[in-house]
Amino acid sequence: MFCRISQDHAGAGRGVARQEADCRALIELRGWDVVDVYSDNDVSAHSGSPRPAWQRRLRDIEAGTVDAIVCWHVDRLVPEPAEPGG
Figure 1 (cartoon, rainbow, N blue to C red):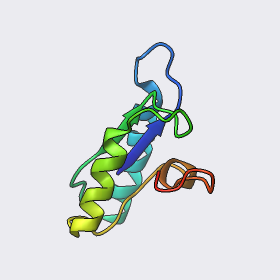
Figure 2 (figure 1 turned 90 degrees about the vertical axis):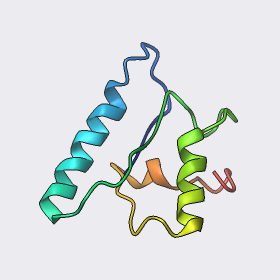
Figure 3 (figure 1 turned 60 degrees about the horizontal axis):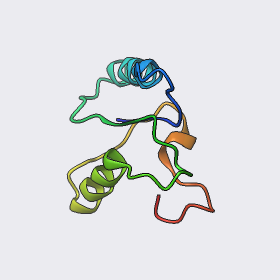
Figure 4 (figure 1 turned 135 degrees about the vertical axis):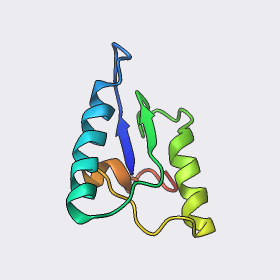
């Protein structure tokens, strides 16, 4: 599962927590198992800041250790065209 919020000024993590809860509900509905949660809180895709969960997710995909990734919305999961490689 991948969760990301670009801005969390309070640092409370509520946005990524809501995304995770919604994703977990879908996963449970489908009868799947959560193997890992990749979460980047308060990290904009456009800021150039390091995105540790994004990078770990890419490494796991390349290693073949994940079968599927669930995300709250596709814009949380894939880079925009101006953002090659995430």
